[in-house]
Image (cartoon, rainbow, N blue to C red; front, side, top):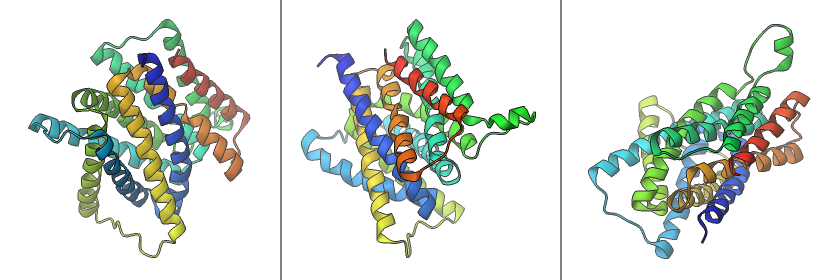
Length: 289
């Protein structure tokens, strides 16, 4: 299959997987808290990934270097998602979903600096569009009129999550090219679960779902399955395609998440934020051209 076409399909898998997953992640984070939502969704994702092993096989021969690198990657992945889910818990899903696209720019810049993947002139322009769009989305225009500058709820956490995700995707591409997309997906998720267990013990957080209704548990499982599909699809694209194509296409997930939020949650966003979301999405699409 053509490398560009392969990257396109991998990116679309991430786009729809994450787009729908993020919508339900918002619901589960509000219901049971972002920490529990992430932990149990990862457990569901591991179960799905294990079912793929008979079809694709898996590499279990890992050097100490790879084991350490996989754990570091899992930590970046975990912290990024914990911040992202916390943003969903306290912020507006449409704004959070648009702002997280900043991770694409960070990932592409790191790929340019460390892996020699080049941006075209059009893609460079697209980067500026994304940054401009995120600025419009993240700031309350009324505060600017009153000479006050204050980020909207959840935006600070989302920007920090974008930094961790940007590093994570470059590490994930590097590892996927060495051991394959499926082992990378599985080992990172297992590493994330181990990290969360240790973190919960040290911070005295409980992972017990207690008397949570079955509906909430099903939503968390759905989030984990959809997210696993998305990350497996993107890792497959990173192994055989290029990050500078896969990442921006998959990050058009905002189109899916925001549409669902407006339709099902009736979320209200200002005209300025709507403009910012549109500019961000246009920028993401242009990065793939």
